[in-house]
Amino acid sequence: MKNEDNFDEPLCGNGGATRAQGIWVLNLLCFIVHATWVGITSVAVATNTNATNTSFDIPIARVQTGWPLGSETSSTVASALTLRIDALTYAFFGLSALAHLFAVVAGAFERCIPIYWRFLDRGLLYWRWIEYSLSASIMIVAIGVILGVREEKVLILLFVSMATIQISGGLVTEFTNATSDNGERWSEPRYIKRMAPHLATLPLYVTCWGILVASFYQQIDDLKLANPDLADKMPDFVPVMIWGSVIIFSLFTFPQAIYMALSPTKYWQTEIWYCVLSLVSKVFLGSLLWINVLNAASFAEALARYE
Image (cartoon, rainbow, N blue to C red; front, side, top):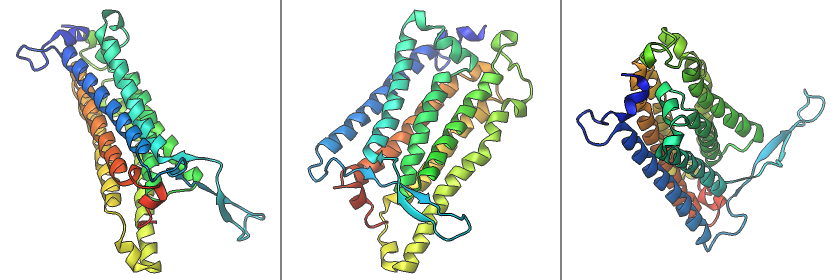
C-alpha cells in the first residue's frame, strides 16, 4: 500500500468513515468553533456599554537611553507601537479559522488532492506551520501584555522567537519527508537528525516562557514590597492563564517527537492531535480574555487590581 492511498482507509480500522472524512469533519468543527469565537469577541466588544474606542488599547513603552551610555540617563517613554487586546484576540482566532477553512475547502474537492492530501501524506503540512507562526506568536504577545510586559523590543522578540519556533517544526518534515519505500520510511534514517530543527529551538522556547514567568513573579515580589495588600488582590485568572498556557503550549512538542519516531504512514494522525491542541490552547486563552478582560470597562480596569 502506498502512503498516498492512506486516506481511503477506515479512520478506526473497522469500517465506517475514512481517514479523509474524519480529518475533514474535524477541520470543519474547528473552523466553526474558531469562527464562533471571533463572533463572541465581536459581540463582547460591541455590547460593552462601559467601553470606549480606546478602552482596550494597551500602553506600550520603550527605553530611551541617554548619552554617554554609561550615564544613568535612561527613561521610559511611550512607544509608537500600538496594541489592542481585542485585536489580538480577533487575530489568533481569525487566523486559525482561516487555516481550518483552507483545509475544509481543499479537502472537499478532488482537484485539490495535490494541494492538501498529498502534502499530508508526505508530512509536509506547510499550512499548519504558517498559521502557527502567526497565531502562536500573537498569543504569546497577548499573554505577555496581560502579565505586564510593556517594553516594545521585548514584545517584538517574543513574537519573532515564537514564530521561529513554529517554523522550525515545519522544517523537521521539510528536510526529512517520506520519500523512500513508497513513503513507508523517512528519507533520513537517524531520528536525532530528523528532529534537529525541533531540538535546536527548545532553548529559545524555554527562554520565551522563562521571560514571561520571571516577569510575572518579579511583579508579585515588587507588589509585596510596595504594598502587600495589592499583591493579595491580583486577579485569579492571571496565574491560571500563565501556567495553563505553559502546559498546553508545551504539549505541542509531543506529537512531532512521537510520530517522527514512527513510520511516516502514521504521520497523518498528527493532523488530528494538532487540531485538538490548537483548539484547546486558543479557547483556553480566549475564554479567559473574554470573561476577565473584554467584558470589563477597559483593559486597565481589568488589570487594575494586578498592576
